[in-house]
Amino acid sequence: MATVLWFRRDLRIHDNPALVAAVEAAWATGDGNVVPVVLIDPALWPTWGPAKQAYLIDSLRSLDASLADNLVLRHGKAQEVIPAIAIEFGATSVHCASDYSGYGIVRDNEIAATLAKAGIDFVQTGSGYAVAPGRVTKDDGTYYKVYTPFYKRWLIHGWRAPAGDATKAPNWIGVETCDGYPDRPDTRGVVIPKAGEAAALELFETFLAGPIENYDEDRNRPDLAGTSKLSIALKWGEIHPRTLLARLGDSKGHEVFRKEIAWREFYAEVAFQRPDTITDYFNPLYKQMKYDTGKLADEKFAAWCEGRTGYPFVDAGMRQLRTEGWMHNRVRMVVASFLLKDLHIEWQRGANYFFDWLLDGDLASNSHGWQWTAGCGTDASPYYRVFNPLGQGIKFDPNGEYVRKYIPELSHIQDGAVHEPWKVLGGLDHGYPEPIVDHAAERLEALDRLGKLPKGVQQAHNPKGE
Ligand SMILES: Cc1cc2nc3c(=O)[nH]c(=O)nc-3n(C[C@H](O)[C@H](O)[C@H](O)COP(=O)(O)OP(=O)(O)OC[C@H]3O[C@@H](n4cnc5c(N)ncnc54)[C@H](O)[C@@H]3O)c2cc1C
Image (tube, rainbow, N blue to C red; front, side):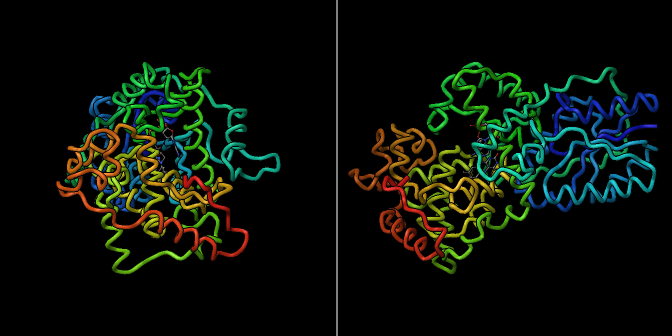
């Protein structure tokens, strides 16, 4: 007799309700045998870029170590492998956390049905969110399409305290049937940060010990270590948002950090309610916006990807992405705006590129982050946002340290002057390009294209250009 514990996006052993449920069930129905399984599913694995795959392999090794090297890795289609493992070990139940993605829901329903035919329970306990999608609704039962009212109701709804440990340690079994780890791919130059639960907890403690107190101000400054960098750990469930929320108090920094965690929950909710918006427009009226395609657009897209648009703040962001597999939130907004409104390229192309490179690449946060910037997503702004790539750099990287860190061709330029290297004598002497487009002209072009949309979409633009 055994239970199966299927780890998915919850690669940790603490504050893990599915783990507790699997262990308790194993003792209730037998002698505490639990098969801890991770699946390398050919339907998902290739959709992650090589950096994400490498990070995941590191994270699995870390999880394996915390299970005393008992993690059972299997390769194959979940709908076939999970029921097969349960039958192989004579399991009475299969445990995992709930997955609220469109793909995950369909897959899990199929597995539950197959297991039911074999008389095996499929038990889903907990989720990757403080409040599971579907729970925070308006009085009429519909979901929130705007963040602030969602946030207020989310606070009122509240969340459980972190899960404790199981009353008795399990016997991990099955490791002799492990298929082994996939090969660690070449990460295309991305330096993979330390993965796993212990690293995530350490990151959080470091953030709590200092940066969180100034978070409300510093979180917009990519030149400072002002944010938690926990998005990667949250993506893979190496830490649970509830673990974070349980440690937060009432100071301004803590409050703003709680609000940011709520953005992740908000986008998960919207994606749960509207799974089509992962790839399609939240506001379909924007589908009629004219975007550029063809050879010239492809060349501009390549310049954006490779961080050679000639706009230092944009290029620094794209190079941060390609060396760290992560980008600061302020810069994500600026580079996204640049692709959409200076290069006139459609949001899905940028979102796919981000997803390919980001270690925290999360379908809900990524697609909705892009749609928010495009103006076609939730929280439609009263004006059409066109971020000024120069102004944003000067404001949020005032001394130019962020730009110099990622663009060696500009390291000879002092202070904030680095944001406008063409104004500096010899500024472009080390191979950094001239701007590939004129922001002022492209901004007008973007507004012109907006103006051609049907009435109801048009919004007055922000005269400040941000
Ligand atoms: C175009 C675009 C694409 C994005 N793609 C992703 C993505 O694929 N995965 C992802 O996790 N985040 C994404 N974000 C949101 C945000 O940029 C990152 O969550 C944040 O930069 C992660 O850094 P951090 O952990 O230091 O954040 P912190 O500032 O420390 O915030 C704490 C946590 O709150 C959550 N959070 C903060 N801001 C946001 C936000 N705007 N939307 C959703 N969650 C938020 C994250 O889980 C984050 O780890 C995207 C934003 C934009 C504008």
